[in-house]
Amino acid sequence: MPRALERVRTSGGTPPGGTPPGRTAPLLGGSEQFEHAEGPWLYRDVHYQGNGIFPGIEVVHHDGRPVWSMTHFGDYSSMTEGQADGMLQPALLAPAETARTHQHVEEIVVAGQRVYWLRYAGGFIG
Image (cartoon, rainbow, N blue to C red; front, side, top):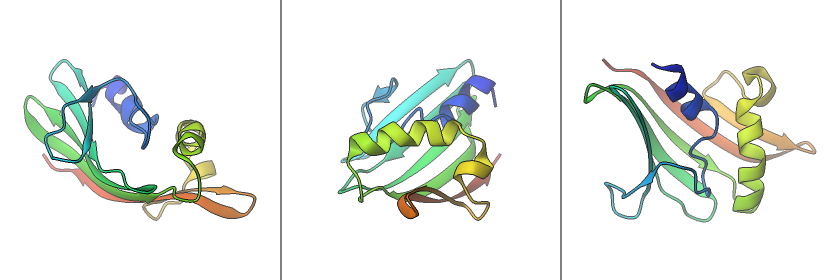
């Protein structure tokens, strides 16, 4: 996967509640969709928003074929979207061991209280 696509995927380039570059007309009704293309590569993030809860799927395509995918379900309902956006990107850019566990759960803890969490699963498919 090109480094630019990896940076989009890991940098909070498509944060919940934000309006990052790459917003496209959603394929699924009621969803939000963001895409980034680079040569034969396409990264697509489709997710739903509701009261600080956001399920979704991210897929990387190569030459029109899906080659990597991840599903996620997260919760930032203890804060506003602006607060979530303001802390999510820096946390995702931080070294993984400072912001996430290795059990397929991301979380952000402020003053000893979990204010954001995300469960995810996925991997290479082709």
